[in-house]
Length: 121
Image (cartoon, rainbow, N blue to C red):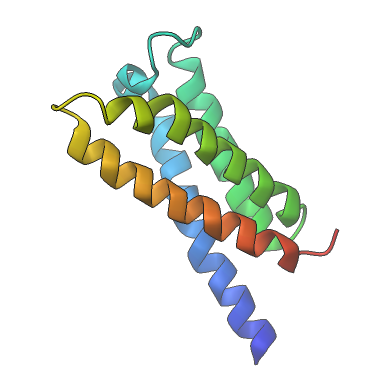
């Protein structure tokens, strides 16, 4: 029963990343403005993060390379926090959304780090 619940939990955790990733891939051109201006490459980062989220989600669901996927997602979320959410706190126009996304990504990052040890190396 515990294994079944654990697998269901992994699927529930991974599905939003699968959907976020697919959204990044399908709507990359519309999301290009989200890449901070000090990061070169522009829209390529939207597609890259989308592909990374899809692959990580599949790794978590299948259990193949799930540990690495969790650590990779945690690092990616940390990069989002440092490059987008923290700078957004200083702008009154984006402060509320930056705070919400900061807390969301911190929670997801914590869940990634909590889940990583559940996978075999």
